[in-house]
Amino acid sequence: MQKVEECFLKVEQSPPESTSNALQLATAALVKKELLAHADSNIILVVASCISEITWITAPDAPYDDDAMKDVLSLIVEAFKHLDDIESPFFGRRTSILDTIAKVQSCVVMLDLKCDDLINDMFHHFLRTVK
Image (cartoon, rainbow, N blue to C red; front, top):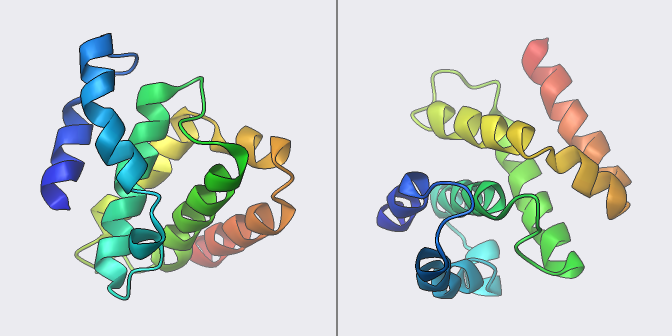
């Protein structure tokens, strides 16, 4: 999974069609239930990181349909749950996800999809982190 993440991190926004085509299989695989509900929280964090990069690569278009986007956004918000743990070896990955999500303005997508509970959870995580 980390190799996939490294590949996504190297891709620029709005890549050539050949690159987009090469990423389609991984993009589709990342929203499979087996990964979204994986037992290993570290794997889920890497998946969230990959998906946040996909949202940046494909912006302003959403990479998935509305239902899949809701699942993806839920996973990303869940990654912020431990944002207050600055000693974690995964802190950098979490802040990278936050930076990417801010760049693509995923909050707007959450509002469009009426993900009020997710927005509430996200701000709860942020306020707990600030506290």
